Image 1 (cartoon, rainbow, N blue to C red):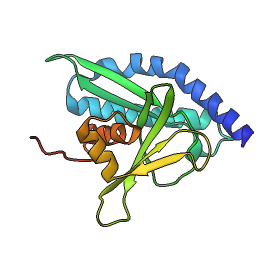
Image 2 (spheres, helix red, strand yellow; image 1 turned 90 degrees about the vertical axis):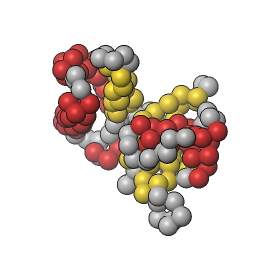
Image 3 (cartoon, rainbow, N blue to C red; image 1 turned 60 degrees about the vertical axis):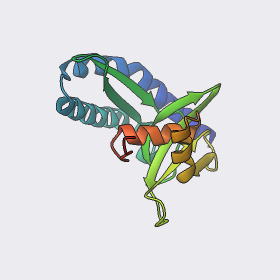
Length: 171
């Protein structure tokens, strides 16, 4: 596990180095929501391929992921933010939403379709490299989000709303 963590952190550091040149190359061309979506999707794919080729000894399912989000700052100006996965995730079937820091703790945030018919989506926060360093919830995440609680699950729910995975009715 120690070698796995060391290799993951080396790949993560590589992502931290290359992310700025990719952003400077591709994102100035994002001028509307459609082109932004396309550029983000394609850039994430290019980065995934780059990191797979750079670190062929690391199994692809545990390579660090990055996530871009573009948002409108002014009427015609976009802002860009990105997240890079902090921790190894060996759990299959989870969609990486992004990462966040709350206080001094860092979290990777994920979601997947729920196997429980009462919930559409289940949210996960990972707070360490260990296989059991997860918390999860569905209704808790939604309730905390609507109450304005600053928790990892509430942030995950908010990211899913931003990504269009969840529709929140306007009040």
